[in-house]
Every structure is written in C-alpha cells, then in structure tokens.
Image 1: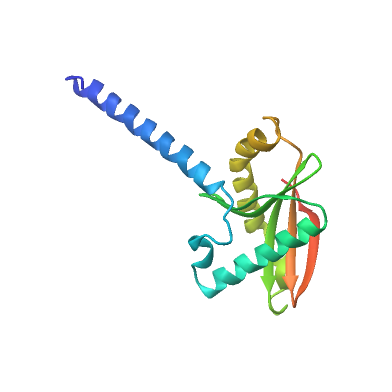
Image 2: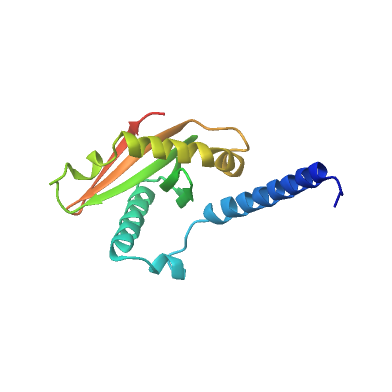
Length: 164
C-alpha cells in the first residue's frame, strides 16, 4: 500500500470497485440460472410464493405445449423480477405471470399497471446483454412483453401486452 493518504484512498476505491464488479458478475450468473423444481429453494417460501411458483410452472407448461420454449425463469435484479423468458423464432419474450382467484380488484391482467411495466422494462434492460450473448450470438434480438393471466383455472396469454 502506498504511504500517501491520497494514493491509499485511490487504491482502496479501486479495490472496492473490483470487489463490487466480481460480486455483480457472480450474482448475475447465479440469478440467471433457472430454478429446478426439485431444488430446496423452489419448495421454500410462503403459501403465496408457492402459489406463484405453481402458476409460473403452469404458464411454462402452457407455453411449451404451444411450441414456445422457456429459456429462463425468475430472473431477479435490483430493478425487479422477470417471471419467464421465452423465445419464439428470433424474438425474445419477457413474460409476466399473474394469478387471481377472482376479479374483485380488476383481475390478473389488470394488475400489470404502469409501475409494474416500468419495473419489468428496467429488469429486461438489465438482463438483455446477458441473454443476447447466451442465446443470440451477442446481437440484441427484437423483444416483446407478454402477460399470462390465470383466473379461475383459465389461462389467457396476452401477446405484446405493452411496449418499451
């Protein structure tokens, strides 16, 4: 370590920045890994969280049955969470899954308001470089945002629900 206080402070800031970058890279790799259904973390949580995971699994099966493969699930960052990421041809699809028992407060699809949309867009922008490198040879693909609403056992897939 240098003896000059200014140089020591600069060195400490540089080291802290490097640690932060390593942490961010490690958390992005960990969070971008799909959660397997038999992992302990997939079974833990409150009843509401378990219902949410079940709804996401149902939505993923629904998409798979229609020929839309799921690339990742539950990608989280500070900006928000993306429930499902799928690919249809050359289009990357960010999917929000919403489930409601009744329509007392407007239903499942209506719960994706402007604030939630902005959060989804921020999270998508965060993960887009990683997903582009992994699935699209580094070129950002055309993207869209879909909503899958589940109400009373009925599934509605709203394609291109909103735009960036």
